Image (cartoon, rainbow, N blue to C red):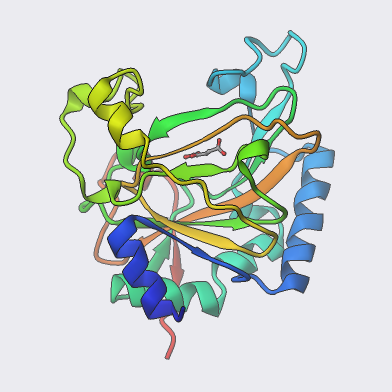
Length: 254
Ligand SMILES: O=C(O)CCC(=O)C(=O)O
């Protein structure tokens, strides 16, 4: 599939997997850099205990309480992470999707996502846009795998086509998670798919696509890198968290 077909698939289904998007050597370097940052516990970090998703330790003082979930500001951590975020390949892909110059948000995602086998939590069904504030609900995230991502180690699940659906507010709970306990929601969730990923694979998904991720039932920590992009004309609303950090403009290419 070329980039245009991939983008068509994203528009149609709300997500698309691009196998081998990151060259093998680059994926290896990114993986090594991620592990080094994780081992050294380099700030800024976000902890499972802070989020309190299902399965997370209840406090920083109980077993697993210091388990890291996200290494924040991936862009600023290491030149390897900045390079992939702004690489000509990503820029070209996003430019084709948005049809204009592209901005990388440093306020959303922009992190190394980890999932710990013992203390990593699951993430309920949600749309990323729920806490984001832009002129238009049109942003795309790029998720890069550094190893196998499967149902067993907490891979992502997506509901195909859900980015186009209009849901009333009562389909979501107070924290804006899609309520799996409702029969109408459950029927939709039965159509979800969990694509298997390998090192170097990318998943592009729309900010309105319903997605979730399971617990890590393997014996190894899972690492992924995720960035969010939008078109230059789709500004973050002033005074919101989305506008709280200077963005990175991806210089338009030929
Ligand atoms: O890896 C996970 O648990 C899913 C993360 C996710 O969906 C998110 O941060 O929006």
